[in-house]
Image 1 (cartoon, rainbow, N blue to C red):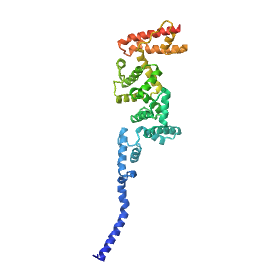
Image 2 (image 1 turned 90 degrees about the horizontal axis):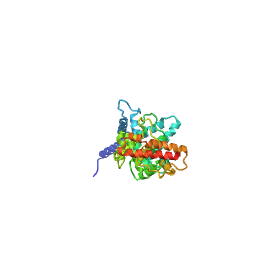
Image 3 (image 1 turned 120 degrees about the vertical axis):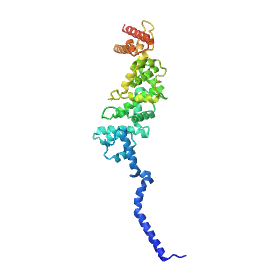
Image 4 (image 1 turned 120 degrees about the horizontal axis):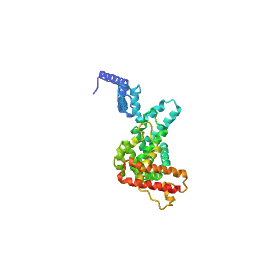
Length: 362
């Protein structure tokens, strides 16, 4: 079967025209469909919408509205940056400060903090290990790096580092101290496999029982919650589990609130925290009967009552006496609302303290 020459010529012409048009319009067609074809090479397409959504979410988190206008004049660029970074508000503030400060010392400080935050993405590293070593130096024991990373994540998620009423971002050292305090309280108030070890170490350091330590930490949480002192002490004295008043999420919330001073001007440091816990712990400890002296010449027993050794100096003895007298004074304990059943113990303990001091002085 043969085709007319005219048909053959028309088919060739149509084919050539089709090829020409395909080459002409191919780039345009590809530019339309490429955002959907290759996610790795996203251009303006769907990314624009995602970026705008991400930027709007950031504004809502800050409590801003459309009338206030974005911090970045280019809303689309800001949205794309937020989408790409996938960073928290805390991290973004440090990154922004790092990129915009002209002070070299501050820039280096921000770089250190940003390096610390990278531990959240890459896991254990030198920055977290440094914090763990500092913790271990303070208490003679420390949990694994993963615990510190989890606590850092929680601090950032709850935006604790930027919760103070100040324009200054916390320094690197302030953040390290914050993580240490958070880990310390978390280990004691939210029991895990590491809790017995840290409890034992701190009990030994403060010379108080594990039970008194737990009640002291629970007292701090109760005060943070705003509970009345007249109810706190009687309740915790008779409680078998000092933390039974709160579930784990509530405890974590109270721990985070405890980290920041009531006026929100500073973070509580570990030294201040230990002093608070020690004071509360000795209060509970003082409601346990003190050992009686074995005789009129039991100097060793008298010194032991003050937590001193036989080579203690006169100044050390006087200082220890004043401290324990204040902590265990019946009037002070009565003002805390201790049950009547414990008032007799408080008076007997105070009498033994006085007798021990008189024996040492002689």
